[in-house]
Image 1 (spheres, rainbow, N blue to C red):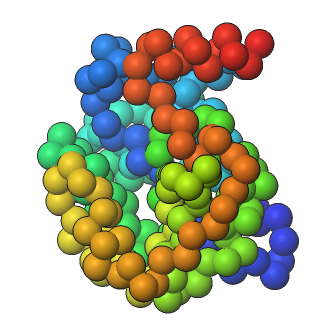
Image 2 (spheres, rainbow, N blue to C red):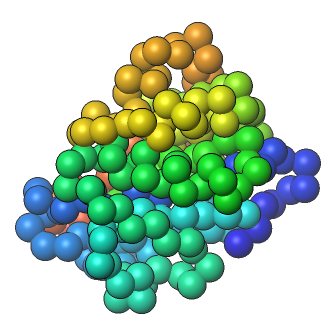
Length: 203
């Protein structure tokens, strides 16, 4: 893993992959995307190419090898992942905070395999410790969201299913929206039908 340019700010990556695939029916992290890779492995490709340090949040007891997670990715096991995305995000940031000097953390989802490398690079270039950076495609905000270090203590206290929405609302003045031409910032795979459409669209 590496940064693509020495003059970009240090941003850590946090990939949330401790959901329970209830709408998918099976463990979607192992579902195959168009090039044969597992969904989670495909979603890790861009952050691993762009960011120096990447963590992934898994369920307690998950085997990263079975999930095809690269050995370069650091593992966080969330004991309370069943309580919601907020708990997984908080667990991840609590792990990263003492282990990284990054100015910001890019929060990514483990079911978004279409994010383009250039998009993440563009977001990293405007990241700072005092800013929250959001990609926007056709007027709609997506992922990843880059949270400056100033906001990490609040992320560490999150609970429940709402993720970081409360932090975004509380600090609307610190949010910088970046227009992108990448529909991948909105495309997460929640159902087998969505995966089927993705695979056949890309062939």
